[in-house]
Length: 155
Image (cartoon, rainbow, N blue to C red; front, side, top):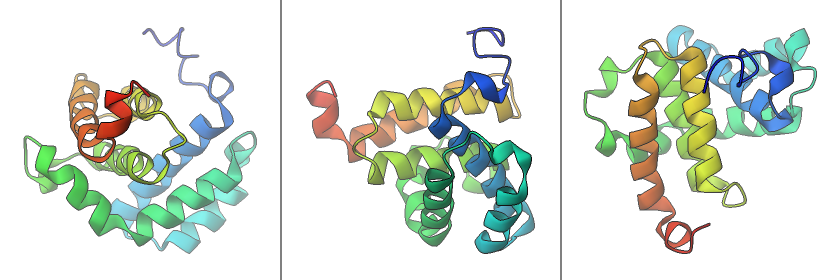
């Protein structure tokens, strides 16, 4: 999909939840790199004009839940990595954390939507041109682990 088809990465092309995911990835990136407290990040991002159309409640939920349960979320996707966790780009790690959390905790969000949203975020934020393929593969395997019944049922 080209940048034009994705809305050029501009917020108006994304759903309210899609914007919340994007902001969560940005906040998690700061959390991973600068070790900023989640509450501080929530305040800072709430003050940003970019939160505007984003689903603020979903953003809050994602950021709080992911930072609170980061070890378990990370342990869920680590077995599917083809490299050491320390070698992951922080943006890729943040995206994998959001995708893994949604696969584990948001059964109302179809697994294909979670993977597709994560791939699009990786195209927007990923450090390497082909990193979206890596994220797609990891989250597909996580989905098989945590949502095998949904996948068999075609949900």
